[in-house]
Length: 368
Image (tube, rainbow, N blue to C red):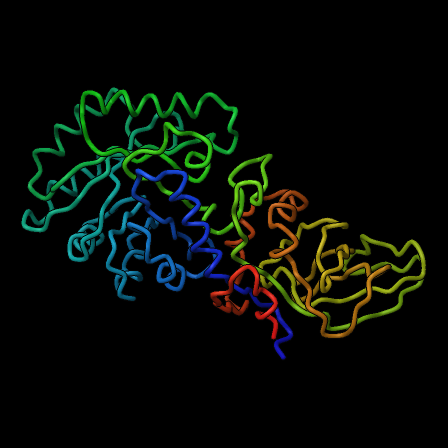
């Protein structure tokens, strides 16, 4: 029996979430964003499961090369583009699509092998103010790129800064700025991220780029994943390795942050910040022991956490769910003052990933 922790990755839920994006943007092609090891879910297994995606988006050339080595043949978009000659040559060899967001990349393209053509996406800074060219710079940059022999085709893209709030007018303004450029320069557009796809029709352009929604977490501040029609993909679990009786006033864990208010049972679960569970999670952060709610007590350790088992029927070896079915990752993120993105990406290599195509009605089979 695996003591833990492990992450069960529900590939059926992953495919379901891709179809949610497809239904929301039926006239768009989809870059499935699998950067950062598919948000901690596993780059290659996730890409293989998302074979119906039109392409994949990664942050770095090295991630794209892992996909090509694994036999992934769909288009791959590198969101930070190539940053030196070696990366550019690799992109040409493997047929990658590159984002261009600074003049250095234009210079590299001018020096590239003219016989190996690349599809380029010019990034426009419509309001994120992180990477990209200002709208007024776009005519000059397009004119330069269109003269380069290594450039086969050009698209225009932008990144939405506030799509986590469906009421924020800045998202509509960002979309309008890119659409206005397309009136003069009729290149394909890519705008929609997860929040954009679900809430902003203006962002559902020729290509969209869902990320967090694929993994079953809400991209919004105040709307749950379930309300968005999404299903959790990662079920992060472990087991109880000890059950103890403590006396009133006993301090629990490093620093004695929590003191028992009465004589009480506590459980010790085999997971800690060494596995990626947030060290700063406060007392009261929920877990599931079986299907019963319990609360974290005391400081998270490297390899274990302590749980308040008052009112909980539990046995040694009971399954403890940190997030997943019955306990949305967003709830843990709010308690820990972080984001679901960060929780997913924080899982360390010693967490065993278990990939299963399990239909929603058959989730119990995963524990047999």
